Image (cartoon, rainbow, N blue to C red; front, side, top):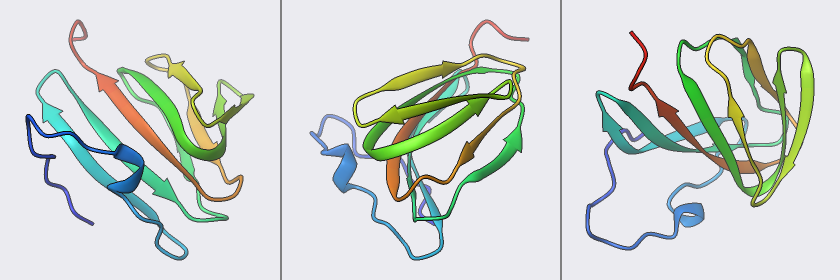
Length: 112
């Protein structure tokens, strides 16, 4: 798993900077700062994320495929181009729904 930021002042096609890996979730950091970070993720078919709770608001945007994001036990089916804000302190997980890619933006500023 590569964890280096993207080159600044250079155009990137985000959906193409990360590939699918069989039976895996792949994460690439786009930008990491003390106030938050942006990552792009790819999920192979059948792969998801277990339930977690973050102390920070998180914005998830689907850039390829379709995903089922569950927040506070409410299922949200998102397709390419759609996004959702996962509120701080809300239990959430990603249920497998075929291959997909997404961008996660975590905002830490304002939380102590």
